[in-house]
Image 1 (cartoon, rainbow, N blue to C red):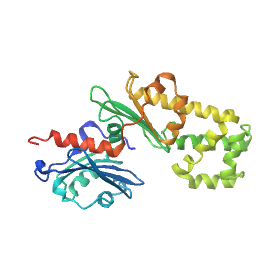
Image 2 (cartoon, rainbow, N blue to C red):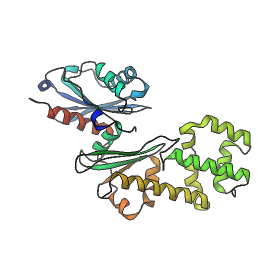
Image 3 (spheres, helix red, strand yellow):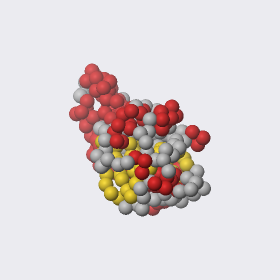
Image 4 (cartoon, rainbow, N blue to C red):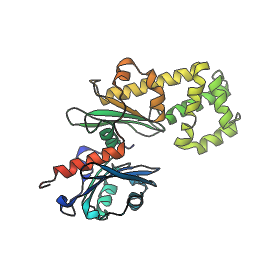
Length: 306
């Protein structure tokens, strides 16, 4: 998920291209850097089908985004009868958003926002709440009771994303390097990392040079596996819990909003959260594609004369 742009530049709906009273279908899209999920419903809300295709993150190109949205496996429709809502990674890129609206292929209405916000809408049925997503990366988004929106963390794995899989993997690798140097006592975690990256300086350096965010995130499960027998691993998990709880407090200083969790790290740490945060965790009502349907329905209903 990407950080949302400033309120004045949020994507929102594009101008209608056809009489909106002719809209018969709604489409909700969840699009990211690895894939796209599309859900089709009647205007009444009955779900008719869904499909999947390749990535549609705006940072990877507007033409590709529209191509994969269109290729998601739904039956051909008269686009003048379709309103589409999209939660896309990269919807904070102002120039890309403008180009995306300019290239829209004829939908009656296009409502676009970032995939984090549609995840919040889907998780809480359009009502106030927060989502903490901690998998490879980490980010939190919330719709507050006063209607305001907030995004916390999500700064990327090099300088942020505390509590994420890549963040844990970096900590594990640093520990393994320190243990190889003799600056730390080698334990279960250090040896597990050596088993992956090698136990010589040149092999570890080569592994790190190629790893990237996803490579480091593959080390995160080693931290969980080592924790029962490794004090360092347990400390890293405790630090991850503290970081995600700090994120949750920044999302909602009142500590009252319901929270939905997503991503493998957040879900594995859930039982370690403090009592208040754990008590506020709820099962999501829907996903980002459901949120995109709510987004476009709201945009459609707010149009005059509809």
